[in-house]
Image (tube, rainbow, N blue to C red):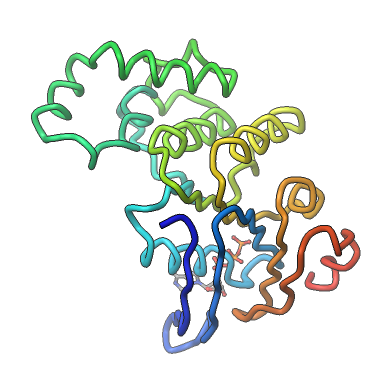
Length: 216
Ligand SMILES: Nc1ncnc2c1ncn2[C@@H]1O[C@H](COP(=O)(O)OP(=O)(O)OP(=O)(O)O)[C@@H](O)[C@H]1O
């Protein structure tokens, strides 16, 4: 499965509805940007989608979900943890296989940090940590990417490099993005979230930044 067709999506916290009910259909090949002001419900919607598609998705959560005590290699390798038998994962913890070392190093090279392969994740900067979570999603290599603010800690050139990499790597993607210009540049469909509902759903080519700013 590379796209999805979900309906009846709802989420509440403390009895207060924060999402839906809403439906979202994403077809193979679409690159969707979820946009909207802080607290609109983008991350919650992303979590609901992930719950439904789970193993078919490469996920970059906003809070990254890295294990600080482990080196970068092992955090990236976790993208494929459920694809191997437990003996393989146990051996990898102590002495990684060369093909996995090479695969992870290549991804880190594409993300501009190959020298960090064996560095403890705790000692990285915010932008480097974000790139480790991106490398983990790339290493998982699932047919669908779900990425919640994947470039929020990156400088301009690196943000473009990462968006280009993700665009080339995953044919179908859903991003939550605060940067409206990046959404228009790298996505072909813009879905605006307002108070937990879809308030805008248009092809990116039909929109300019000011159309989206009305959501804010
Ligand atoms: N664990 C939680 N407990 C209680 N309320 C929550 C929780 N997670 C989210 N919310 C609430 O749900 C609403 C939507 O939050 P969500 O994080 O999905 O928004 P968002 O659009 O992703 O925001 P941001 O752009 O700041 O990441 C907000 O009102 C938020 O306070």
